[in-house]
Length: 247
Image (cartoon, rainbow, N blue to C red; front, side):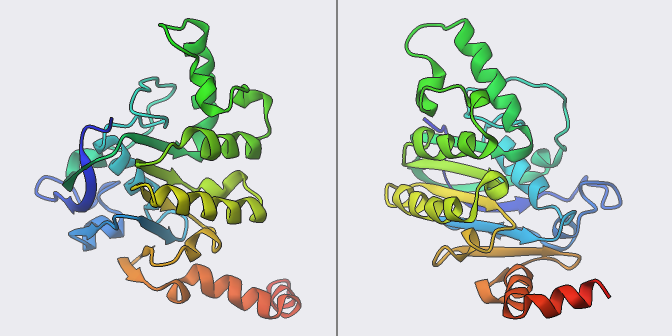
């Protein structure tokens, strides 16, 4: 059981933050006072280095998740690398308590897989943790297969799911299948916050999209995002775009 209700708003506490020092120097923190969160799907998009993952991580830690990922029951650590931003945000939450939750960090999912094997080597009773992921070691699957096992087997519905670039290991067809899985989970009361570079995932209908840039973060329609426009320009005339890039 997630101890807090569904996330509604995030507010930034700037009183004692040095805005000239990371992570407080990131434009979204300096310029914005906070953001609203959708009860279904909220996306963070934008260029690398604009703070999408930093904010996502802070939300996860403030919600009780391990900085390296996993469920709220994971408490391992390999190398402390998360920022202190979670100490400088407050949250507004509703009364609906989710019965499941997960924080996926693509870059540290290998560490999560290792921790599952370590915990299953000395079980405390009941079934093995890996059974919730399909019963097959995540290390014995390809990167994409292990991600897919997480989505299909571990996410049980009525959950609070925070995902950092989940498309990193997924083919376009699997990303489309992920949209279907997300839709099924949302129908059970699940809430997603996702940082992504995938125009496929970003197309989920009626999602709340925030675009991060040097000007902070702003809500955008799908077609307004730089992500959509870049892919749209490329596929309209890929030969021309590549020719211009290589001139």
